[in-house]
Amino acid sequence: MATDIEADIIARAGGNYQDIIKLFPKHAQEDILRLYSFVLVTNGYANGQPQKTAEFLALCRAWDLAKIDSKFDTKRSPGDTVDQRVVKNMMHIVRTYKIDQTWVEAFLTSMQADVDAKPFKTLDESLVYVYGSTEVICLILSKLLGLPDEALPYARLQGRAIKWVGFLRDINEHNTRGQQYFPTDDLALYHLANLNQETALGSRELFGEFVRMQLGHYRDWQVQASEGYKYISKELLSPIMGAAELYAWTARQIEKDPLKVYDKKIKPTAEQLKTALKKSKK
Image (cartoon, rainbow, N blue to C red; front, side):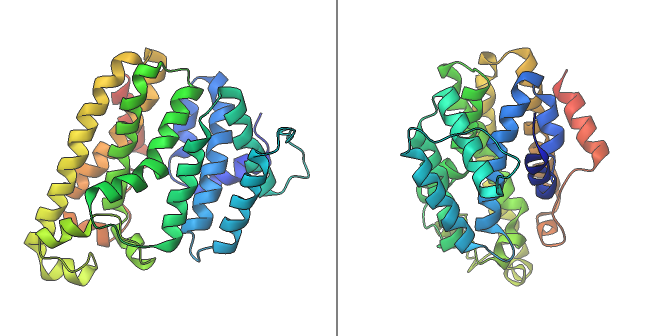
């Protein structure tokens, strides 16, 4: 079972991680916790406020050493530091489920991009980042849950779709860290110099059109992702559709008032979460 370290990592991350994980079959929950302990700690270093660049680089070095050590011990110990624990957890996942290690490397590369905070010019460049930051996590989850290989392309699209909504939801947060994930080519189409609140307020109509364009990408990818639901058992489909519905809810709120992204982080309440999850079970 998860120890205090994993429980504390999930609790500190906030959001709906605890609720979503509980929706998966009990036999899978422990390894999902292992996976997300690594993901959340790494992301916390790369995107925390303040950013913890030294800690991020140290964790990357710890992973590099572990992956080349065939005798690396993944047994958890009460004396583990957080970094030691999450590296053990990730290596356990890689070995147990025969995960392609290039997926882990892609994730770390995207986290390095968060640290570097260099803008992306084209959609293709943005999608390279999305692949490493989210799509590979969905691929690993698919392996962990025993989904067939036919489901993997759709898992990537599901990750891509929800990440794109997250980009819109977190525009203001990303601004504070100097990060820009939407292609600058897209901003140029709507004559937006940047996505700062002042720019959006000064070009309300153009900013609204820009947001609707990005929501169009999200919906296209979500429709494609849903075509892969046929490969997923009913037991596993409910939490996946539940998570997708939460992001669909967020997308609807942003579409109603694009400027709302500057007021506060748009998150469903506990009651709205229950409604979304109940809807996914129908």
